[in-house]
Length: 214
Length: 214
DNA sequence: GAAAAAAATTGAACGAATTCATTTTTTAAG
DNA sequence: CTTAAAAAATGAATTCGTTCAATTTTTTTC
Picture 1: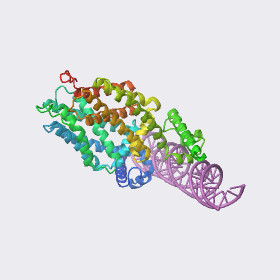
Picture 2 (picture 1 turned 120 degrees about the horizontal axis):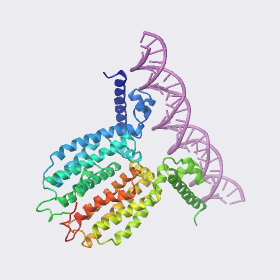
Picture 3 (picture 1 turned 180 degrees about the vertical axis):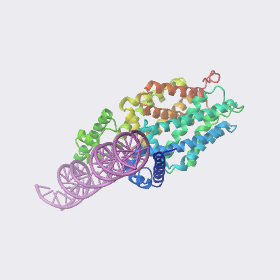
């Protein structure tokens, strides 16, 4: 049987995360006060620190849940991608992007990315970095799958191309969250402009080489 | 004639920047205390804030000087690149990387990148972002130059490929500074692994297509 | 079920960046 | 050269995240 202590603990951890996430969304990560989070979660400020290392850690817990969802959603596409390289890459990329602002604001993403860079050795930052690596691996697998289906030239290094594409979409996402007014549609359009030419470079089609389009 | 006031001001700004940079290098950005910087620069703490918006702003001033140097150094390579795509890309990338740790520690880079993401609208963060865009444009120009010399397929979009390569090297640099023990040589080797295949994809040579090597 | 041990909670105290009312210095006006 | 206005400098007060000694709650032991 789960002890009273264990139950209380799980309950409090959930309450803290919910309270914090609510405030982060409503007021932004920076404006949210630890005191206020504690109040909402019905614990003392000191208790917050028994559950999370610091304020950023609470944010990272939320962000990691979000990224995990994105990863799962991506799996569906990799399992059965469209029969066209450019189309397949766009589908995966757009799904990442569409998911990204569902739970988290740009300001929350900015804070999370800053934390993952500045404090890379905390457990939840490491978890975040690992999730990123799994997203990258997912893109690599997409290219591999397309290659197995003879849509991508066999001579291409799926690993290199997949990782480069991922790093590119990731960097573009950073620019996107830095630019508060930039709409999602603009991000997608810009990403498409860059991934399109790469996709056509690696595509294996009769028309591929003659239409290595600009 | 420059007024007494203007001279004093310029002198103080320089003193503050030097003091701060020294402490950031010696003790790390995080451990350096504003009080200590003020003391070294021979001004009061309050005065620091008449010259820079906040602690991060002082760091960004140093970092921007560094990036400006990298940009200038890169110009030399773009003006007269090696007659081989892969070689040319590696030269530029390696020069970026070699320069990066000359004045700034990994810890300083981490802080600077975190700041540029989290506070993207301060003047010096915007300047940093603009410098980054100019580095990206430099890579695009390298590809264009190679294309003009018939080393890169004319059908390739220099813009797309250049930007993708830059975003990739930038993202790899972020991973590098996050990973304190990773040596520069490993960063370069990993970057080469990814840029090599891309370079060979866009290279225009008799042997190009048959050696689209993995 | 009482006592001891372990775990969890608490909030006041601390540390460090930042702010701001006051004072000092420099420039401009007469 | 005085004096008023403007600019710059100052450091004490404020803010907010984080720490930690003391207290309370839960579990274990006998």
